[in-house]
Amino acid sequence: MRIDQRIRSSCRKRLASLMYPFRSRGWYKHYPRETIGTEDGVERLCRELLELTCGCVFGGPFAGMVLPEYSQLRKWPNIIVGCYEEELHGIISEVISDPPSRVIDIGAGHGYYAVGLALMTSQLRVTAFEMEEHRHTEIEEFAKANGVRQRVELRGKCTPDALREELSTEEECFIICDCEGYENELLNPAAISGFLKATILCELHDFYTPGLTGTLVERFRQTHSIEIINETPRMPQHYRILRTFPAHVAQICCDETRHICPPWRLVSGRFMMLRPKARAS
Image 1 (cartoon, one colour):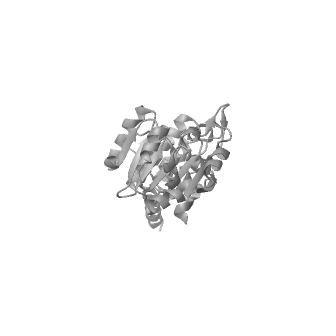
Image 2 (image 1 turned 90 degrees about the vertical axis):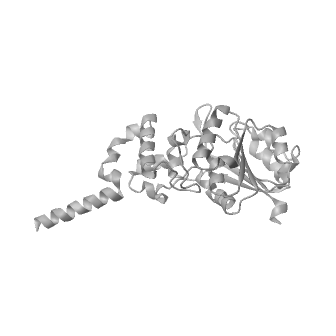
Image 3 (image 1 turned 60 degrees about the vertical axis):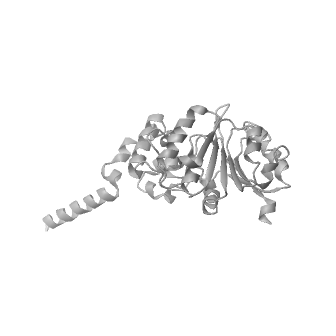
């Protein structure tokens, strides 16, 4: 009888090892509360997550997107989990399910949205503006790793003239804008008439440009329906990959902590969604 019990116990442990490999290895012991928030702790956590996902994004609208070795996005747990800017997932899913002719990504960063949107659609063309040109190689290789390099066009700094040229056609366009306050200079329909037909998703940076939200509302209220989207609390239990993680570790995997601004205060993410009224009618 004892032999049968040992066999059953061994089988249960083996099954647990296959289903939850990190639990069986006691991986959580490597993440005490006093070190998990450090740079080294987050780096080790990302390595564990990437091992679980085989180097891909786990969930969210870009689930399955490859994060190659050289990508800086591999250093963000919320990118790997797929909960990055979770409050925008519904909008991004709308773009994927009913894609426009093209997307303009202003402030492409490491290429998360430019590559992700191209990957999740079959014909969509993306113009990605990124003023820090040392990132261009990273974005190019990121697009290649996901098989969409031919549909992602890289450009440098997005100036009003460059944007006016991009919007000079009659194509249906979706603009995603994250340019650290420079949207005050760029997003002006009085100067660029092409905005009147464009759908725009903009991250708001009032902490860099005080009064920015009110300025944009005044500029677009006649032509666009306006929605303000605030950062929402993250729920780790919504992501299956985190169900065996200790609560304090799972929460760190989900939290948005990138909004640090002088004088070193943490601020919440806020976004503005602008949809043309003419199209809605």
